[in-house]
Length: 133
Image 1: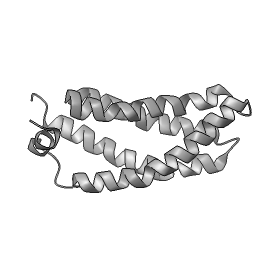
Image 2 (image 1 turned 180 degrees about the horizontal axis):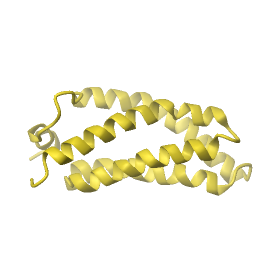
Image 3 (image 1 turned 135 degrees about the vertical axis):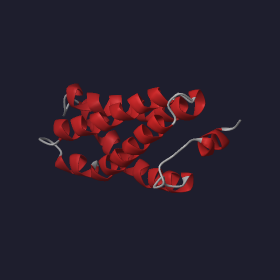
């Protein structure tokens, strides 16, 4: 069965956004992520910020990229739930790490944090509602 058929068959909270809405939100967030993360990685590469500051950005990027294959490829709901917790926690870590040197980068993560907070509650809810599947 394809991923959309599988996803649509899952029990979900009534407030679950349509897949198209979720996709649109990510299309808005990805350019912000690209610019702000690119800035941090460039600064780390050039030595103007520590690699320790870039570390949460790198972990977040890896966890964000891993989510779709885990959720829709492996169809492993508990692992996807753990992954989104990593994404959420690293956003907070990123904001704390970059705030002293580049506040605009920290502030740019606001919409990302809001969306991932919603997505995290959604993922945890779906995982709970479909436990045993």
